[in-house]
Amino acid sequence: GDVVLKEISKSKSGSYNASATTTTALRPQPTQKSLPGASIVELVPAGDEAAKKELSFFDLGLKTGTDKVLGQKNLPLCLKEGKGCSQDAVREECRPFGHFYHTLYQQKLGSYYSRKDAEPFQFLEVGFFHGNGYDTYREFLPRGECHSIEISCLPHGDQKDGKWPWGNFAEENPRYQQYLDENLLHCGDGNDVNYLMDVWTKQMKRPGAPPLKVVVDDGSHLAEHMAQTVLFWLPRIEPGGLLFVEDIQPTDVANAFATQFMPQLMKDLHYCGNKEKLDEDEACFPTLVGMIQSIHCEMHICVIERNDKPAKEPTLEESKLPANALDMNKCKSKLPGHW
Image 1 (cartoon, rainbow, N blue to C red):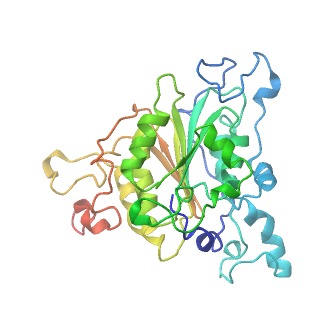
Image 2: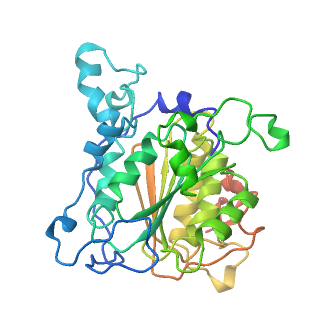
C-alpha cells in the first residue's frame, strides 16, 4: 500500500483492550497432519505437544519493534511521566505513541493460526513499510505462507511512470532481499486493482497453494485505499477467514472509512432483501452480501470474518470501488425513508 502518510497516521493513534465474544463455529480445528506443497512453512511431527502452544502477539511485537503493540508499552510512561506520548488527546489511550492491536490479533488468530499444528494457509499484508509488522506476522503465524505488498520498493522515479519517488522504505529491513527472493514481498501499488489481480492470479492462487485465510490492511491509511482492500480481498478469502483493517482513526484522510464505508458494510451484514421493495431495499456492496459472518472492532482496528460461503472471483470491474463506497447517501437504502 501507499506509505506517504504512514508516519503521520501511526503517531496519532492507539487501541484499547476490549473484551468480546469470538465466533468459533467456522474456525478450523488444529491438526497434526502436514499438507503437501507447504515448503515455506515448517513441517510439524505428529504428536508434538509444543506444536499446540499458542504464541503471544504482544511479546513478538515487542521483539520486532512494531508499533502495533507499543501503545500498551508506552501508556503508563505517557500518563505518569509524559514520555512516549504522541498527542494530548482527551482519551488517555490515544495519547501514547503506538497501538493496542495485540488484543484483537490474539483473540482472533492466537488460538489456532499461531499454532504449529495448524493447517498451512496464506496470509497477506497490504503495506510492508519497514517490515516490523510483517516480521511479527511471520513469527506469530508459523504455518502461514506470508505475503506482503509494498509500493516503496518499486524502481525510483515518477509515479505517473509507475515508479516511486520517495525512497525505498522496505530495504531498511535486514531480510528485505530474502523476502524478495522468496517471492513473498511484492513491489507495487496495493490500491491498483490491476496489480492486485496480477499478484493474486500469478503469485498466490497457484495450483496446490494453501488457502487464503488472513488479510491485513496497513497501507496508506487513506479511506479509499482501506475500502479497496475490503472490496477486492474479502470475497477471495476462504470460509472462516479474516480481514483486518488497521488505523481506522479520526483523521481527515481516514475518517470516511469509519463514517461512510463501515455503516454500509454493517447494513449489508444484516441485509435480507425485500422482493416487493427492491428499489428501496438494495445492497450497498452486492459482491460482499452473504459472505460476512461478523464484524468486530476495537479502537482503530476492525476485523471482518468470512462465513461458510465459498470464496468467489469477482470480475476486475466488480472489484473496483463503487461510487457509494465513501458516500453512504449514494446507497439508496441508506437514504431517509428507505430501508
